[in-house]
Length: 349
Image 1 (cartoon, rainbow, N blue to C red):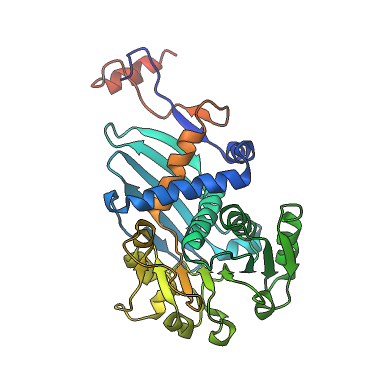
Image 2: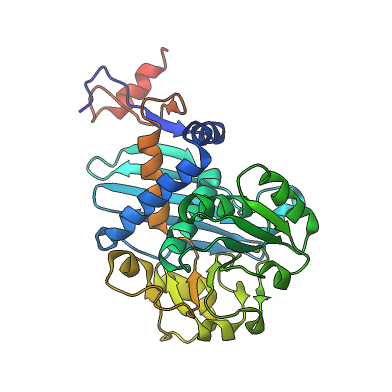
């Protein structure tokens, strides 16, 4: 409980401090930590408030609010998705988030989430691959070499021991960028000239393209048996990456079906097409990978609980560090009923 003389501040993690925190912890160690926090929260999935994200769509992009609560803390993320931004020299995705105490309603953390979303998205992919990908997977095809590609690669290395990544993008400059950024990171990088070439010898196929449209990044004949598909690019209505026939050959795993059926690859399928919720696999109440020839598909769209986990992780990680600043966000009158008096007294400051 605050004493009358105490000032209530809210810790704020800027982009600069998020990057400093990441390097302080270590990129791969932070990816492992985020994956652990996400898996921990998936194990208590039933405790959370769950709702599809609140989305405002336009012809050029989407702005979304992603809220959830476990009864002790409430968290939300504001995030946009504007594929056209890249051509204007802007980020496709930007975000910030807040964690609050349910008992008082007071915010406990405000943080940038553009960098943090990239980290948590990759951590989620790798956490899921740990449960669904073929055991001993060493090679991944990374189709779409934009902002997520390096994070995805390093998360797979950190969590499942990935050794090789085969890069492909319709823009060779994006592939060159990803290859350059991954130099010296402990992964063998191969630049490929086609999606088909990138999948040679790959046990994991990750698709992450940005165009907001129905697309066929993977056609049915490109996907052989036994692979794990990590489909993270289809994340809004009207945007998909996989041929429908692939979905019918795969066992499909999702975060929250009411959201994924609107935004994910399965928007191409009938409402009653069977899918498995990831939290059930993680808790052992549903099967994941059952056989060597099985195609597993993670139809990833991102869900609020993953952001909640990331916020919770950062709140703990910054304690005792210099990687945040205190924000004066909370009015604290000596008498909680006298907010106006506080305003009047400020006139003399």
